Length: 619
Ligand code: BES
Ligand code: ZN
Image 1 (tube, rainbow, N blue to C red):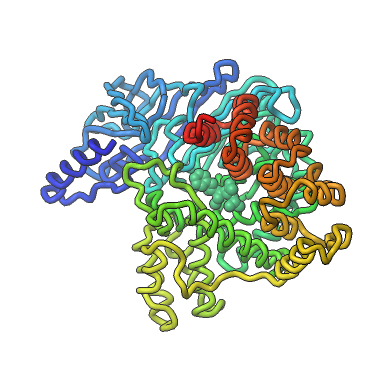
Image 2: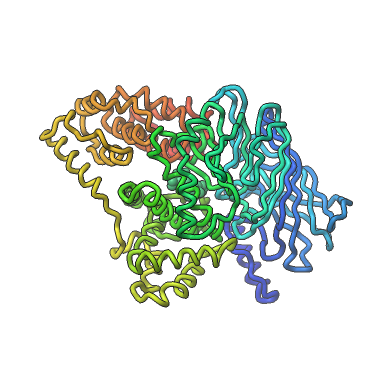
């Protein structure tokens, strides 16, 4: 990888001055998007659940930026490329062309080199995916809620689309797409595109008229039904989950109106949610028109719906204005975290938004303490590194803190006007930190001397959080600190804790700041009074189990096992494994639980846990 990029750099250095071409600068793609670009993708794929494989063809319509180009380089990972054909215009005379699949790079996968005939502007690639495709998970019926039908779904961000479609897997290339998918009886396929909600006949057609980057390409299939929530929002889920999901998320339309009113029109037509099985490794994924959502946020009281606010907000920050390279992830996630909290304040309350901002800030502080200083910069150096391995809350929470600081410095009205314009000016365009700086200098700072470019540069380029940041505060949490303090000093009895009105956020804050050496006696007191081990709220249970591990509270052990075996969402499970790995008995337990849990985990989650286990002491 290192060697390769050195030689590429060397070649570019040699060629560029001669040709005047700017090479594409995405270190996570083999594509030369400066020479040729995919304009439109058409997929015709069969979903083979018994082989855990997609097979069929991908048609690419190409736009040449250079007449002399005779080669197209695509990204692939573990794909079986069977044949490549070329054609020109509407001509259906497919002509077989030669191709070469280069040796796989551990991070980037294999470059597919295709010989491009002089006039060809269309390619057809016959291929099949591997059961190990890093961007797909195939689930058996037993791993679903209904237990009757298998399920499959994609997770393409950051660089996994290449494991299920041969393409230019870089956010710098956008394409429209259409697709035909074929499934076994009783299995409905959906995509991040226009879906026909009622269709159940085994042959599904999709159309995505807005151009998207490859990481937003999404597919899922299973025993799915649809329920509308408003005219333009709805939920796809397994039948058993559908009513609860539709009730939990019925604020989605209100959230859309809240963003539209402040930051401009929703540009994607419908906005639906797809509820995935609990092995989905993320909380959510902002696939356009159809966000993919973990079922672990269906709490029954809408207390975890900021996830929906987050994925919805990506319809502006990320899906419209898109990070050009993965090092600039904060342009997607920092903006989105900022917007998420604005939506929560508008639709629920400022009080809830403040609590969530404080929890986010605490997560950031804790995580920064474990990171190399260089990786606490908003824009980390990803050269030669896997974006999955560098993923942290820095892009999210530090990015959001910077925007919050800007808002406070220039005033909300000026800030909102700038942000609305930023989305409009840069819609469907790749964004870099440098271009962000230009945009804000020209459209906000020029009129507002309160902030300097140097301060913004400090946010972007320096480690940690600047001392002039506007840190979030929560009055509600001050009361929790009070109650906790009194309970710990035993000036307040367990039964006197004022928990009646505590929201999920207050419980999480209460638990997260309890001492890790509380002792099993006091753990048992809390458990008896508030039934925490038995709580159905996955965030509260997560905080409780972390405390249980540290305190070796064995009564929660069965719950811990169930939790880790039934949930595959990384944010919920990884901290638990990390806590277990701190002691010898915990390590043994972690290994035995993981043996049971592994078959149900997504490839991404498997890799993360296995890296942790491998780095831990043997015992
Ligand atoms: N786009 C992200 C998920 C992602 C980021 C996948 C980077 C791969 C690489 C999604 O919008 C997200 O941020 N999900 C969070 C939601 C949370 C912050 C509300 C998650 O899954 O935890
Ligand atoms: Zn996000």
